[in-house]
Image 1: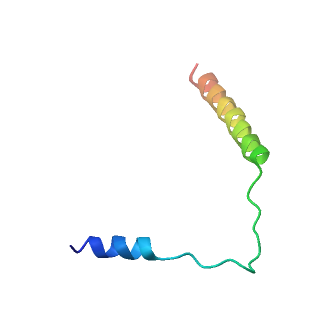
Image 2: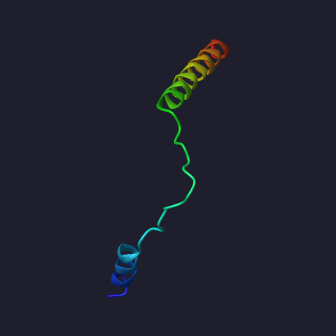
Amino acid sequence: MRTLAPIVLLLSAAPAAASGGTEVPEPSSLAIFGLGVLGVIVGRQAAKRRADDDA
């Protein structure tokens, strides 16, 4: 019964009305894709450097 009260409270809580708020733009999908490609490139270069150091 003690776990039921927080769940009911969580489900009954309403979000604040954003009638006059400032809109925040979300990150572009292209920027996220670019960061992913950059991470792959950096990761491959680091792995190559480690393989050269071990040899």
